[in-house]
Length: 190
Image (cartoon, rainbow, N blue to C red; front, side, top):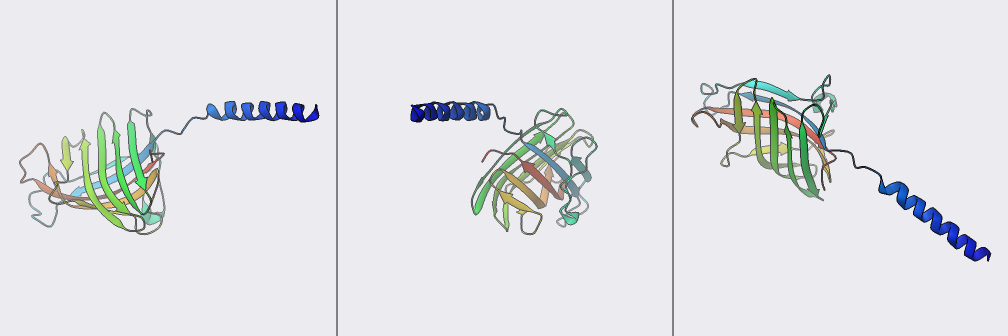
């Protein structure tokens, strides 16, 4: 009889545990960014859209790996932004992500090696500067996760990037700039 009572009690505890955990909600994807578009070395006279852009939580700062400051990240569905990302791999990672708002947007995709670097593309829109810029296929950006606090792991990334060539998609392709910056994305699909 005691064995049966213990079995029933164990069953009730197991059911309570499952029910208690089934309501657990995954945190939404979040991210932030700082980016600078500037005259590149190819032809410094043709960059007509030089600007700086930041996307961070209202009242927060953008990321800065130089001072180990991750900054305030916007969550998916907050402050008018949608955030999505997928960071998966073990030693070599496939990375994609985007932050979209009414006045600013940023996206990236590519591959990066854990503790190293990789290549890919970025695109950025800013209503303040009336510009959409993107890296062309013939000049990929380099993503770096090569020193602390920069890192990549399943579901998250803190990377800096350098793009030797960025084009304004609304102007003739002769409007060439370069870009650099960094971003953090967390709670991404793995």
